[in-house]
Image (cartoon, rainbow, N blue to C red; front, top):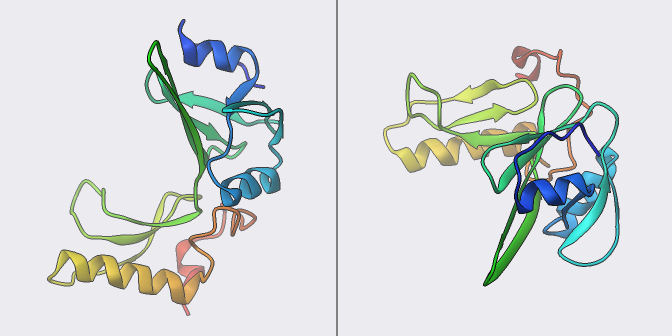
Amino acid sequence: MSDWNGEEGPLSDMLEKGMLPRPSTESDYRAMRKAGVKFSGEGMLVWAELPPGWQIELIDTSTGLLVDDQGRERAMFRYKAEAYEQKAYLRASCRYRTHCSRPENLNWCAWDCGTDTVLFENSAASYNDQRVQAMEWLNENFPDWKDPSAYWGISAERRWWQFWK
């Protein structure tokens, strides 16, 4: 599946066996299949084959990311196995998101996860208005932005100013 050199525990056991959590929704499954991830098996954990160049990056002992050959986050997964409870999910990442974690300010923006670029930002007085305006901008410029299988084919070399109308 990948070059895995993780720590001991349920997550590393799962990854060493070539398994990942089953995609959480049909949309997540479709996005991963479209990207070239192959799944097989039944249950909470399934065998997975990643496309060439894809890697797994761990966030902590129970959470990781699937990163494509261009270094872009394509999915987040979590697997937690304890004596009394077992949880697992895999959620595909959308190319475009509303986001507000820029260090220099707290404005909501439309963000391209493929290039790590802010595409639209505003300074509306209300925090909620900022979020709504960012969503409206994405709806106008990328109507399928909430679909995790959409827009990943757009080159990471395309610059933000090429998206302005």
